[in-house]
Image 1 (tube, helix red, strand yellow):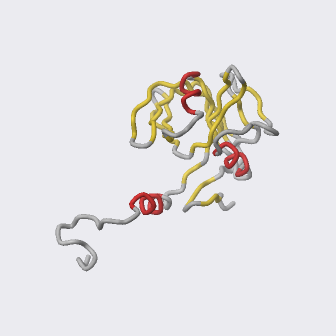
Image 2 (cartoon, one colour):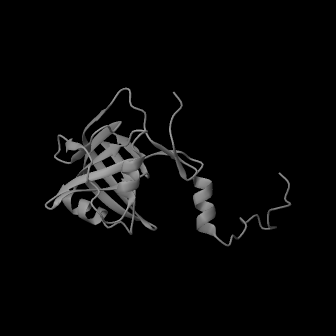
Length: 172
C-alpha cells in the first residue's frame, strides 16, 4: 500500500463530517428491517429498528440498538415484553410509518396478537416474542438485550433489506 494518502503517523484522516462518512461506509453492510411492537395500556406502540441481530443460542437472546432519541423505546422498555417483526420485502410503507415520531402508526395496519400478547404485524417474514433482559449505554444508542420466548417465520416470504441508504430486496 502506498503511503500517499496516509498521514505520516498512520492516523486516519480528519474528516469534516465524520458522522456522514461513518454512515456512508457502514451503509455498505446490508441489514434487515424490523418493527418492534408492544401493547401499552393506551394501545399498540412500535418503531422501526434496523440495528437488530441474534446474540446467543443458549440462552436464546437477541440484541437491538435503539436511538436515545426514540420516544417509543422508553415506553416499550417499561412494558418489557415486545415482538420483533422482521418486515417483508413489500412492507417498506410500514417501515417508513413506524420510523416517524408521533402519529397513529397502527392506522390501517393489519395485525394480531403474538402468543406473548404484543402486536404481530400481518405479512411479516418472521416474528420474535421477547422480554427485555438488560440495557447498556452505547454512544447515541441504547443496547437492549432480550430473551426470546417464542418465534416463527413464514417460509416463502423474503425480508425487506436496507443497503446504502435505500430499501432493497433479495433477488429470487
